[in-house]
Each structure stands twice: as structure tokens, then as C-alpha cells.
Length: 279
Length: 272
Image (cartoon, rainbow over all chains, first blue to last red; front, top):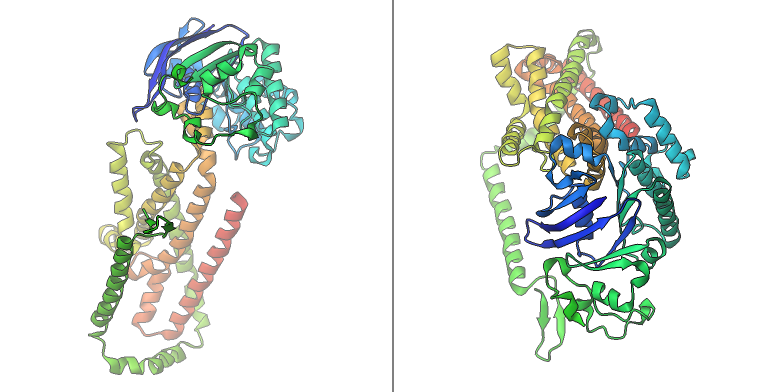
């Protein structure tokens, strides 16, 4: 359904963020994208809805080649791709309802949206989505009056208001506490299953990814170094993705601090050599 | 830069290196020298006999000003109304023109950073570099004396002020909110109205009422050059040495400014 072929992105600064990424996502499949900071995860999902312009390669959603679209066609295609953000990216000074309705902007004319005159069906859909994510009592509150978990649920409702075929989810839990993180991930996986939505989830937390996402893609320095079931994430594989570290020990036990610089791979700048050579 | 290595290899730290310290010392020295020099230039034409006389002169004028001639108030209502109108209409016109200019000037919303942005920035700087009083002087010569010249003078001066502050506010917005709206497939105009506008609304309101507040003050003196309002009455009173009328006008100006101050504070509180 989503097919990414040899996708490359070079930023103006010269950094190669993606060096030929290829994979496909089946309908209804939820894929976790893991990798160190700077590996290109955010760039990859932003290339899909063209918030970032890819340098080379192609992305297809169904029959549409997203990488070929311009202007009007691109906006039309974006309507079918929902996006959920790390810092929620709600419009802080608008109400919860306005934020959810903003998911319908692609379907409504400018003046109707300026006057907040959305079609009755859109409003009913927004109500039912807000019921579904448990925010029935907060409809008229301003977005900046909500807690982190509540805001992320508004973000989810906004993405679903688009009636998308595909969800792009960028670090949905990085700004949330552990319990809320799990609740949000549970909600996302459940909603995707209910609607048969495909999705790509960027995620930092490997344990959380394994808990909720059946398929994992490991990205390192702009290249796919693992693509397989979550159960296959052995220490070897994690080393291949993140670099040398004793994965069996709890986090506080790091013995040798000599390799501190090496433990934060400057992947995007290409300072780390061939990831396979690290061992 | 400022990490120091002693002879025994011990590390020390200071904010500035020796060279930077020397430069700072010279900069301070230069500042003191310029101050002394300026003072000399400033005072060389002063006639000290007049200065020594100043307290008595001030007392004299103040004595003539009191009490204000309250009956003159009847003839001040119209100029007062004109002054408020000049400030309000001038600000409104400036807002209407400056808002699109700000979007064209902000680095993140400009259609062309190479061509449009420099042109708009020039308009903003040009408008800001000329005082409302001088705009008034020019416009009275072009349009003839009256309220219209005042309104346009105020508007021309305010365009630069509002445009500059507003485009700076636009450049400081949170881009992820804009990204999120764009990702829904929204039209660029919708991205502006949902992603950008709500973010700059508080700044917009503050800037607009702040400028209105300044314009009330500026329009009280615009009359001095014939552009209508209280200044006109002030000038004629000054010319005829009618000090009790002058003091009344100054009181009225003070009252108006205090009132506008209070009003702007209320508006700002209500919107933010």
C-alpha cells in the first residue's frame, strides 16, 4: 500500500539524512521506526507527506506517486495522510474542537473555515472522535489548558478527523510520562486496528516499540539496518542499530565512560563509519 | 578560549582572555572620553546668566498659568474629538496596510526572500525613519491644513512601527503548529489563518493598542504644524501668550493620555 523506493535526502547543509531507504507497508500494518537521534527517522516520515522534499527516490501510496505531485494534487493527497507529532503541534490558542476540526481543512473552503462554519457531518465526526479518545468534557477548552496526555489525544483525534488511509506518527510519546505513553500507544494501536489503518511510528523507546508494534524497522545513519518482527530485536541487532552497548544490563550500569563520544553517534553528519564495522 | 594553563599544568578559568580584557578597558575609556567631549560641545553656547535665572523664570510662567482658564474648555471639545479621531483612524489605516506587509517581510512567510522581502523592509524602514510631525509638515504642504493631513501622517508613521513589530512576531512563531496544519492538506491561506494567525494574535493586539496609545500623544502635537487637533489650539494659545489656556490644554492632553493608557491596559488584558 505504501511503497518507498530508494529514498534519498540531502539537506542544504550537505548532510545525507537518508541514503537509499526502501520498504513497503501493507494495508492495516503498523510499523515501528527505531534508531539513534539523527538517523533520519523524522526526515523519512516527513518525506512521505512532503513536509520535507526528498532528493531522490519515489514514494507511492496506493496508485498515487506522492513524490511526483505538486500544489493542488499534493494537498489532496495529504488529506489522506494523518500526522501525529512529538510536541503535539496543536494550535495552542484554539479550542480543542477547532483543533480537531482543523483536520478537515483540506475538505472545506477558505471562508467557511475562517468563519468556523464546518459541515454538520464534520462536527458530528469531531464529537464522536473526541468521545472516542475520552475528551468529551474538554471540547470547548483551549488546547494550552490541557495536560500532555490530553493534548496528544487531541492530536490523534485531529489526525483521524482527516479520515486518513495512512498515519505518520512522529515520536508520539517522547514528551509523555511512562504510564501516559503506554496509554497513548495503546489508544493508537487500537484505533488503527479498528479502522484498518496503516501507520509508521517513529519511536525512541525500544521496549515500548516491542510492546505495541509487531514489525520494526531499524534505521542508522540514513540506512535500513533491520527490518523484521519485534521479537527479533536481539542484542546483536540493537548494537547494529544503535552502536556498542551492553544491552543486557540496566541503564545505570555503564562501566566504561571512555566511549562517551562514540555512544552518541553523529549519524547524520556521517562521522560514524560503516555501522557493521563497529563490532 | 579563556581556559588558562598554569606552569604546573593546573587549569584555571576566566570569562575573558587577556586580550579581550584589554579591548573592554579601551572601550570604556573611549566612552568616558566621548562623554566629556560631548559635554563641552553641548555647553559652549550656553549663556550661564540665563541658566542661573531659570528657576525664577519657570516660577514666573507657572504663576501665570495658574489657575487654568476653565471657560476655554467650551472651545476645546472639538479639537479633542479631532485628536482622538486622528489617532484612531490613523492607527486603523496603518493596521490595514501594515499587516499584509508584515507577512511579506517575515522570513518564514515571504513569497520571495530575494526580491519582495528587501522591498517591503525598505518601505517599513522608510516609514519609521520619518517622524509623524515631519510627515505632517509635508502633508500639510501637499493636502493643505486639516484633520486629513493628520490622519495620513499618523498612518504613514505607524505602518513602519506596526509592520516591524508584527513581522518579528511572525518570525518567532512555533513552526510545528504550522507544519501540522499543512500536513492536513490545508490551502496556504488556511495554513495562515489556522497555523499562523492564532499564534500572532496576542502580539497583534498588543502592538495595535500600543501604537494607538502612542498616536494619541503624537496627534496632540500634530496641530503645531497645522494638521488639526489639540495642537492647533495649543499653538494659537502659545502665540498669544495665553498661559492659562496653555495649562488647560496640557491638562487635557495629560487626561487623554492617562485614559488611553488605562484603556490599552484593559484591552491587552482582555485579549491575552
